[in-house]
Image 1: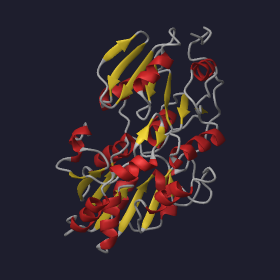
Image 2: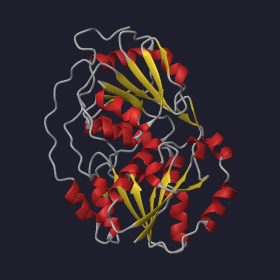
Image 3: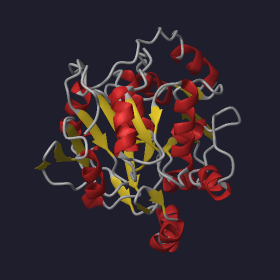
Image 4: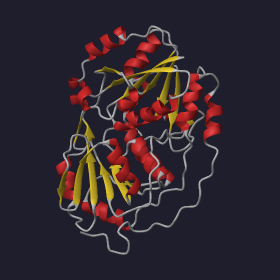
Length: 357
């Protein structure tokens, strides 16, 4: 079995899932070629698990101050190059195309008549999935961005028969909480985030972001977004402040970390994720990142559920290596076979101290 596996590289969540899948493919009788698009190649990091991967420019979204900017998105994307990459992508000898919302592999695979399967969070958005009203353009983009023959969605709840639990890329680490709070808001202005965090000087924050240098600003320690360092800080943190991307929140739920999430405005997927987290009672949601919102959350964080997601990557890798035969409903029944345990009571992240700056 030879598979072309496309990964949308705009956000780190897609790449994190791909790392888990790459590890799951090891030892199986399958040859996987990875394709990444949506981010400049010099901005990719920790890519050793993918060997000699392919890269194309692809399509991406322009953001500013925590909001998607659609006009800038349209002007920054090169549609002629995008169409050329679809036409010229070498697909000879591939038996299957898999895409995690990567549009070039998806469209090239269907164009060549190769079975094309989508595996990712975006393929979980059906009629029962919590989704805000309106957002006509964003809905069309999600529907047509990376079209596939079969879509396998990933979510925090089995909203439909094609929806599986999250794919996680988590090392075996000690998850007992220490005092620091991890902050990952790559779509926000880093200096503005630091200014807000410094208004709570008694709380220690570990801020991560693409391209950020190592530095310390009072109670805020800043780091570049490197996988090993980030996962270590995540495993030992007392809580997490992040945007509403699917993968990081999934990792927090699995490791039972309280979450305060701010959805990226104008981004339908993140707004829908925030809605689902509210409905499920899994995390606290803030429309704006303010000192008052942080104080409230630090004093009364939403307690995470007791979840232990199975090794979804291993099951999917085997299924793909065997030719992707069989209905997804059997995969769902296999992987959702668990009962949520009772929650613990909410307790302040700052212990018995008042959470105020």
